[in-house]
Length: 575
Image 1 (cartoon, rainbow, N blue to C red):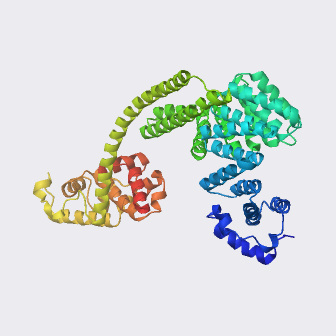
Image 2: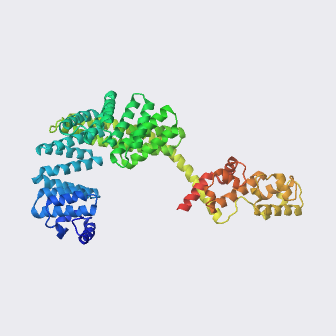
Image 3: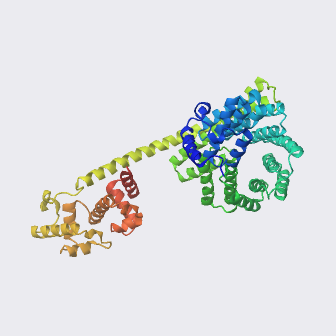
């Protein structure tokens, strides 16, 4: 049974919703419920922890703790409430402000109470790839933990610093730091703890990057034998890492088995899994490329990686080869637009990777390795200049590629503009029902156009029959020939082509094809369902025997391809 009465709970649900947008005004706006006025911190804390999944109720207890702490000038309670309120705040700026306010209050009179908030702040920066700020918080956490005599938080600080080093690719120093963490855990934490398993996983990964494959395999087996029952999440990560480890020593089939196993069981709702999700897809793609030579399947793996990179903004150095793979593939396909798009992605990838590494290496060398001392300014400048030079070379090489692709793009653009003008002209003529390339019957004379003398009555009869043939859409008949049409016009194959040439200014074949193309132009414009059909089906609808003959006739008459015409019709509908 809740401590709040049913009525007061409803009131405070409404109240908390109203103040949730201004969480910094607790001491001014919040009113402690009557049912909680006489309760002490221990009671309120217990109730909060009991109902922590109920956001609305939790906010009532936390605001009460904060308000009481403010009234009683209890800094520790205020700091605790502020840090916990941050968990329930979705806006990042508000969350950071709450955490910082909690730390400021806690470090005045209750240093230990601020350690959790300091760790929370560092993790927030870390998860948003603000490595320099994250490192600063971890170092402060480490120093304050020593002052507060908290070995647990000392370990947490070192563990986070090690993770940060791993994330920027400094695996040697990361491994050394993980070994220090392992020393803390063996002394202070039970051997089967989640924390210990996580450290083993991170050590195994660092060893793999350092090419210590046997050592990495040893820790994988240890995790599998000792930690899987309670730490299935880390076992799956370790399984993926071991799969990559086997790939690097040439055991591709065994590697694929472990990668599939880890990928199927990994919890994708956990943000910590995203890195290993990407890595498993990368190496499965590479294995598939090596063993099966199935480029389409490899592309699907790599395309998923590109989507995940866009969604998570996680930079993993190995995944750079995904974009190199696509650039080479698009060169083979002569797809200039895709090449330009991929090169831009790769340039962005390199830029972010370089920026994150530059912003963190200085701090690692100057603050953590010595914990207080700074390294020489000359060495820092040397490291930065080296990275800057390497990045500049990449930019130059990529710029050359981009210049070439821009030229190709301009050629494609000019071609596209010509197509667009032709398309617009066709639509305009269809809208105004203007007949194209069909001379008026009364504008010609027999003497001007015919080589042989054909009597006027015969000419008029044949012209009328042609008109009837067009109105009844006889040209849609697939097997229509000159002989068949001559019979329909009650004439012979000698007179008919001459009259078609005189009055239509076309050969028989061009005459039939022109009628068919005019028909399908109008049908496609008016019938959106027809637009969804394949070119083969549309060509049959227009009376052509093959898609190739249809496409050729369509291009000869309109100057554009059928697919381009259909695509732009769809765009007009969408707009």
